[in-house]
Image (cartoon, rainbow, N blue to C red; front, side, top):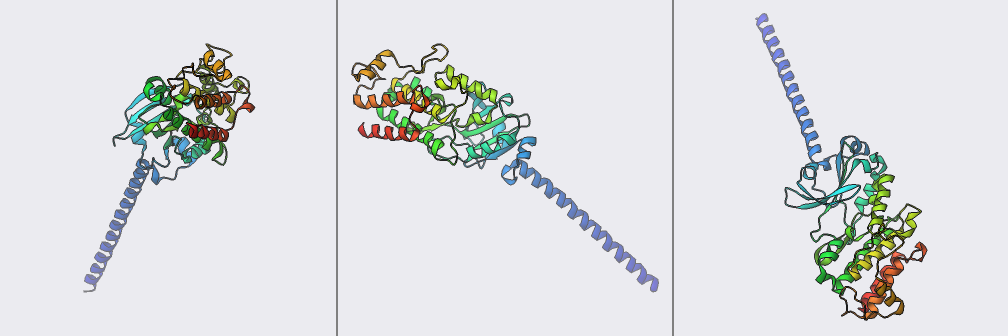
Length: 356
């Protein structure tokens, strides 16, 4: 009888031990599986991961901002894209997502970017936080393992202002459209120059970098982009601007953009709008700071514009056009200190609008 009780006790203890081991192994497997699932979820959904500068630099990841909360690396990197623009420092793509939405992707070449992500992360965070009705928002930023960088923006189907000036002649002849675009650009630039804790210089303001939404609502793009580039690429950006007719005289010496150089470029854009003409190629026409024909220049000096063709705007009050062109020319003053600040520009455009 005693041996029987001993046998039962041994069997019971052995069974309990085996059951304990089995439960332990099941729990361990579940825990590891849970960790793998969590790791997968974090990779698939960047929102689950607290992204540090080291993570972005070593592994490549997606930092998302307002409007890009639902984006993933897969959405962006695997989306079929159509090249819509190229520059010395990168390529612009129209990307079609599986969700039938469209994004604007700006790819920055590794050779043109600042090498360490730590050096630009503060800039990326500042640019990603900027929201204004006349500025193109940064929805997401991706830094890849080979140094490539992608800036993700909304896509605007009307294209850019340069295309509009070239192709949409009938609408460009409408004074209210010209004025609306001009005031919108000025307001966006005003926010960059005065609406932030530290002013942001656009650095590459031109008609190609003004995107148009519904009803010709303007959005300024590419602001602060030069801050993500290395010095060589930044200088090439300025040289490209010079070829296109946007390089202020002082940049031949200082080599650095400024608030005043932004004002100069804005003046060139105003002249593009009112004349429907491209800026003069800086290399082909050295020494010319803007492209107005002599007939228009003389008419401005003599304050006689009735015989001057300004983009088909003969139905607009002559004094209104004159004041608009005079503002553009003041913005294009050779001396940086002779140019108005953006607050003065906005005020003058509003006055012109009330007199139209």
